[in-house]
Length: 105
Image 1 (cartoon, rainbow, N blue to C red):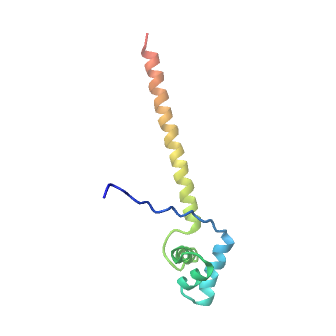
Image 2 (tube, helix red, strand yellow):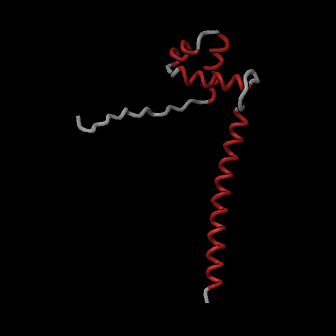
Image 3 (cartoon, rainbow, N blue to C red):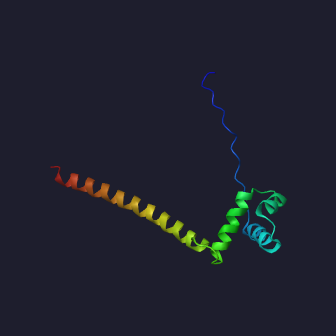
């Protein structure tokens, strides 16, 4: 009864090439088979394939949402924003230090 907590072993994240994703989505689109069936045949999770199919529909303009290009642009902007915040904070600390040094006789 002690406070034992069993942790699930973490799944390693698999990487898939753009070509594999494109071909998997094309299989769903061209065969009309359910995502779960195609995913099982490819040995991937149906939720993974479902995400790829959903994003493909957005990229084709068949569904609402951010396109892959817009997502990449947003990611770049968020990265730049974080860098600019760091620079601003460093600048603030530098100015505060400089003012303190100038006021000390």
